[in-house]
Length: 242
Image (cartoon, rainbow, N blue to C red; front, side, top):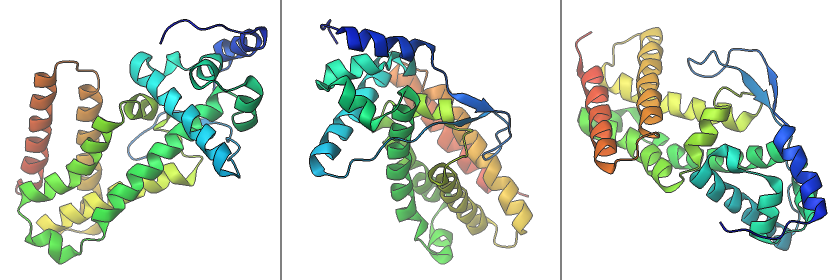
């Protein structure tokens, strides 16, 4: 990223970045998660196009830092330097670092939810006509494509995946669950609602676990092999006799 001049104001603000941590409440939440939930402050959404462009540049810079250095690389004064934004403008939109991270994950969740909802429009009969391998590909492809084109998504998702204080996060989980249930039901139309839910949650757990492991792999060949095994595992699970 290179070294840039840091003002006294930036240094003062920067000291906040190193000591502030998200407030945490103990609670079980999410699909199969019993982790801690985080309550983060909201960003102030811009009202004008010019402000929206600046807001988006700030989020883009945060995503770039996360992809290169992890979530710990995000510091408010560094974002100001990268985007040539004054500290006053930065804190006008984002009261602190957590608000910035919250806005970025909200962007990701909204985009991914819209992508998954396109596939949710398929009817039960359409899912039933698909071979299992093709049904699995339809379920996996939009998610894996998004992960590949947004390298900051998984590090952020690991940080906040148990957080359920906002409708966006929980709605994305519901969309993924409904899609997975549709695939399960298309393989076993006589399954009870409870069985369909249990199998769908199990499939999502397999997907989450494999994708989480894959996100730490740097060798493209190993990652491709992991994804092949993920696909094989989902197909085998869906086709297994009950």
